[in-house]
Amino acid sequence: MAIVKELKSGKIIMGKLSHNSDLLEEITEICRNSSISLGKVEALGAIKKARLGYYHQQVREYAFFTIDKPMEITCLIGNISLKENKPVVHAHITLSDEKGNAHGGHLAPGTIVFACEVLIQAFDGQEFKRDFDQETGLPLWNLK
Amino acid sequence: MAIVKELKSGKIIMGKLSHNSDLLEEITEICRNSSISLGKVEALGAIKKARLGYYHQQVREYAFFTIDKPMEITCLIGNISLKENKPVVHAHITLSDEKGNAHGGHLAPGTIVFACEVLIQAFDGQEFKRDFDQETGLPLWNLK
Amino acid sequence: MAIVKELKSGKIIMGKLSHNSDLLEEITEICRNSSISLGKVEALGAIKKARLGYYHQQVREYAFFTIDKPMEITCLIGNISLKENKPVVHAHITLSDEKGNAHGGHLAPGTIVFACEVLIQAFDGQEFKRDFDQETGLPLWNLK
Image (cartoon, rainbow over all chains, first blue to last red; front, side):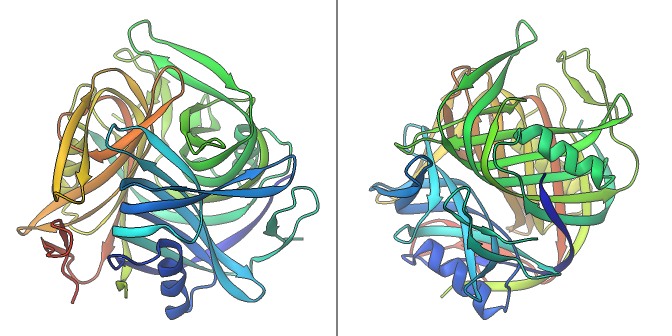
């Protein structure tokens, strides 16, 4: 069974990231500066290069890789919750290259912003805390 | 001309799906359990294998196919409305493999969750009901 | 540093686009008809053919290209803001073909709707105006 919680709508923040910033770190910093520890994020724009993760489910380990070329961000979606009592952004990204081919993965530090427009919607409600999950090896929400 | 309706914001639900569940069925079940018959859904995570649809517009028929490998869900977006008086989830999904190549399609039953974080936002307003649409052969909203 | 503004939730509009319409123009028209000059948009569905842009960051120029085949819209996300005092929609799109391969880019006029379900959420707050940005050559938000 899925485990879900009902939340209330919180503040809405929209804006642009700075050129040459680290995409994941910049979104995380906005959340910290705006005291957002629960919410969702979405973004579009372009990056100079991407660093992405793919989770090897059998060996329970992330493989990280770089796509070292400018690409459009066709879609970034993610959420904000707590890990070790700090707000963390968990985001996945879809990218497209000059031929229109799409790429993607788990957004890792090292993805460099060319231009990016971001929307963050905060939620009010109980804390969502990430803990080690035995079944997957991932830091998932402990919602019992 | 587009046909659109104005809606009010309803409840917000966030949580995680269960390991090994059917992605589409699990989201549908949350909607039923939470009495949501109108809304939107988004999700990210990873799947063990995907079953996707592609609509052949000329012959007006879905072709369903399986991608039988673990992939990241880089983006799932969809909506909740009524079909034959039951809440149905219409969702499309974008996935990425270990090389970072992206795949996608219409989400069909048979897509198995490895881990998935889901956000559902309900809307209040008039009913959105799906009916057979002559022009496309699809079950589209009858909003006249 | 990112530059962000806090906004209030505005009206919510959901509906379907018309068969054979231009995807970008139709969404823009909904915004104009509903007096929305600030907001976000998301959509899923299918297109008959796509016209997409890729921004060449070095030469600071968009290259536009057509993918002339029916595809699923696995994800469209975008925002609405002002450019030369008119509401403009900036959207990126992810598509998938009959093999499940994903494509994408900056949504340009010339993308033709087969069927499309759209959700627009308006925001209330200060104006977001696009101006020429020296650093990137793009029409970005002037939020100083």
